[in-house]
Image (tube, rainbow, N blue to C red; front, side, top):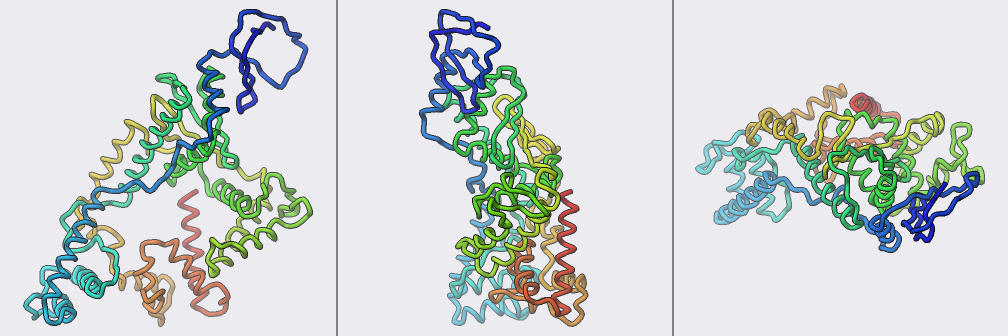
Length: 456
């Protein structure tokens, strides 16, 4: 085998020894084994490697930074704020502002009665104006009469627009990373990036130039770039993405939870008799429990719930065996300056988002139209009746379920996850005998089963 001598060399992060061309050659004993693979590179590639070795680690990619805003939501909030500021000034001009507000929305014979509003709109306006008068903060409602003819924001459309927004940002950030290290991507070439869910190491495929593929891996594996790309892929998936299953997702989550709280890597622990054992033979759940107890990030009232939830998931993995549960490797394609989703029909890559416009066009266009069809426009009383019937609680008024002075649905009606946590905490933990607790448990179990069906 002949290689160039009088050369300059550098070892990449992946253990590949790269060398710059010299002018003379020398034979090497072919039988001599080496862990290094020597390849010739040009001066530009060498400069890139030198940058990788000398520059301070920098994370260019940001999967999520809270910078997204929906212009239609912003417009609605702006009008609502302006409207209720004006209403508050008008209400204060009356001798008894509070009585005036009550009459305006509850007394049909009152001169200023809001006859053009329906019952729900009057109730919203009444509560909003009263809170303004008393100086209390109250979030706005989008089924408010004052914005009913403004452009509506559909949840599914907004989620899709947000994902497309962050795709554009990540595309630009990736280009900045490439520019920083002087890397040029081949044109019209489909390149795939695959990332493991534990160490977040990137594997590049689709490039014949192995030195370029290695450089791309080194660049992405610098700082938290690969972790951020993994997170971006995950956040861009839909419920039917073929790369993700509930089992894979739960395995990844419990791995990072245990490592974050205890410092132990489940892959390094002995998996015996349905348990993960530390080097001294201790069940990993013991140090994990202590970490939960000492944690300052988890509210005291939720520590028991958090521990039980993760302990259950860990036991499931331990019984099956870590190696027997599939891993959630995530992949994404790249071509001509943009990343493209795989494993799902919805794509957020450049030139592939026409479906979002079509989805938006198929939805109600104004807030008034939206709340005639949106299931969340059902008032609290109807919601309570539906759940009460589902739980078969004939004598229990669901309005009695309250937190911080607000009914269950006023506070958590649109967030089933938080509602679930509150219900479990308030009614299940430590209360196993009452009929109401059992009904709640059946309801939550049914909800869990439905979520599993949706994901799988």
